[in-house]
Image (tube, rainbow, N blue to C red):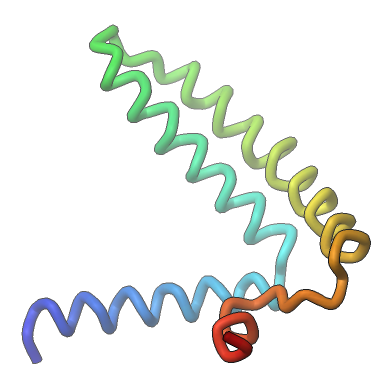
Length: 99
């Protein structure tokens, strides 16, 4: 197997695993996704700014992501899914198969 095919296979397995976790534990999965997203986003912003890296700032952003953004986004998007175009497919597979 080539390196490119191996990395595609790994990416597909990771994506599949992530989606299984979303089905099994949506709130926890979304909270941790937000946690890591805030870490990466703040890290990129700090490195791009050229300033000295502030680890406490990253910790504050990560804490906000896991405790506030992740749970509130989970609730908010659940409300939107139920009330805004509720018959529209939510999953990529259903959406792509209907096109």
